[in-house]
Length: 396
Image (cartoon, rainbow, N blue to C red):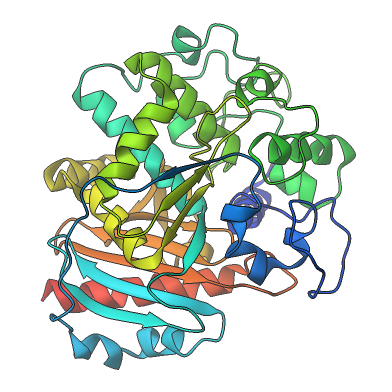
C-alpha cells in the first residue's frame, strides 16, 4: 500500500508539472531554433508564449461581445503587500492582473510583455471543467454519482465503474502515473508520452484522438478505485470529463467550449488546443492575454452562492491538495482547487487563476519559467500566498 509521504510526493510532482512534462526530451540549450512542437519544451520560457503557433490543432475565438473593464480603479495598497511586491519583482513572473467581477482593474503589471501578449494558461485551464460541470448540473443533465460508462460506453478499464465526481475530483486509480513517469518507469513513461501526444504537446504522427486513448487506459493494479490520502492528479481526468459532458449535454465539446470562450468577453483572440478530432483539451490548453485570463476568472464565480456551497462541500467530498503546493491545505473538487480563500487552479509554467466569491476578486498570473524543473512548487507557493493576501485585504 502506498504510504502518505509517497502520495504527497506524487501529488506535488504531478500537479507541479500540471500538464506538460519534459519527460522524453533530452536536455538541450535554451536557444534552440526554430520553436516547434519538437523543441519548445527545451525552451520553456519562449515556448509557453508561442504555443498558439506551435500546437498542432487549435481553435480560436474572437468574442462577439467584449466584457468592458475599468482601468481607473487602481488599488495601490495592493502593491504594498510584501508577497505581492515579491512576485511583481520576480524575474519569472510575466504578468499579474487583479480585477473584480464588475471589471474594475485594481492592479495590472507586465514584465517584458504587454496587454496584447498571449500566454499559455496551462493547467489553470482545468478549471473550465468546474464551470462546464456546474452548468450541466444546474441544467440537470448530469449527476456527480453517475457512472462514467453511462456516457462513455466504450471507456477503458481505467475509468469504468468510477463516477463523474471521481473523475472531476482526481480520484481515479488508472495507469497514467505521473510520479512513476518522473522517476523513469518505462511503462509509465510510455503512457504519459502517449497522453502528451494526444493532447497536442508532443508530435502525434498517429493522429490518435482523446476518445481512442481513453478507451485504452487500464486500471493501476486490481482496481481503479482510488484509496489514497491525496488527490491522484492527472490531466487525462479533466479531458475525459470533457467527453462525459459532451455526451451528457448532447452538445459537441467544441461548441460547449466555444460558447464558454465567448462568455469570457475577451479583447484579444482566445485560443484552445484540441485533439485531431477537434475535442478541446480543457486539461491544459487555454491560451489568452492576461486581462482576458482575468475576464475568464469571472466565470468561476458567476454563481457566487453555488460556489460558496461547493467550497463547503469540498471539505467533505474533495481530495486533499497538500499545503506544500498551495501555501495552505486545500481540496480538489469538481475540477478546481478550493480553500477558504476561494477557488481556482495553477498551471505547469507558473500560472494561477484564483477567484473569491466573497469579495468578487479575481487574480490572474502568468509566469515564464525557464528553470530546470518545469514549475518549482515553491514558486507556486509564492503565487498562492500573494493571492490570499490580496483577498484578505479586499475582504475588509
